[in-house]
Length: 352
Ligand SMILES: Cc1cc2nc3c(=O)[nH]c(=O)nc-3n(C[C@H](O)[C@H](O)[C@H](O)COP(=O)(O)O)c2cc1C
Image (cartoon, rainbow, N blue to C red):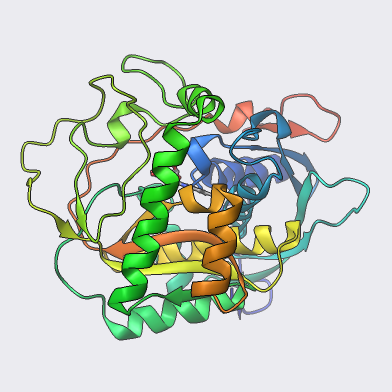
């Protein structure tokens, strides 16, 4: 994020927020980051003008994600959102990613002292943090402007990742086939299916995590080529009823792979930051994204995509981008349930 300096002493807002209020503001935004199966695998600790972001291994998908790769991508997305929240307050975040090799679950430390007004694009991205939703289904047959594609690719590079667009029809079909194969194989894997069931919440559930039935359609939509979504409903008649959904296949949209040169936890955090930057940038232009991590949860398919479609870079997420009417509703845990003082106690906000 770029910082446009404020004139000396110029306040960014009306009344300066207390440290606890700033921490709460950051976390209230960060929880709206995307996460695999909406596991929200994070918690935060605050001390003065410093906030630490921790991965919550208790929320890791032990079957689908044994290395914690998707957990760290999710935390990276929360980190980008936290940085953006600080920018929206007119602070310049200082970020240290994986600062302590002895504490691999400490994803990042963020501190804020210097002030600088947020740039217009940062404010626009921030305005989408709570509005953006993962899309599941097809897109309108409208191409994405080339300058937006270039912006998304530049953004990914700034976060240490790359967004590889798969334009060639043959390669799109290959990628779709990888998603289809993975989805079929995951559905046949009992351990995986049980784990997914634990995060696909039934209608009427009061849970504030997991994928609610309001987040996907009761009638899965086919795309050309077909990129099947996750089977969250698993034979139950769950999902939102959308009468306007057409039975004819719709466009798969612009298909891309978010990839990194390496495949270590720092690369996964980078991929998560790049993901959230891309999702929010797209959202500012009315472009939604569907995410597919199924083929990356199967080692053989991931290796195939690495060598065949990524020139040896490590694929971290498959994305489809396009315009569509979105009705998905998601849920999140409250900031109070994930933010603690560094001593471990819950933080309360003082309003003096
Ligand atoms: C690493 C990662 C992998 C994901 N994989 C999928 C996926 O395979 N299929 C899917 O429908 N959504 C996927 N998602 C999106 C999450 O399900 C979504 O972010 C979460 O349910 C919260 O909903 P929201 O993004 O609409 O706020 C993934 C998100 C992340 C960060």
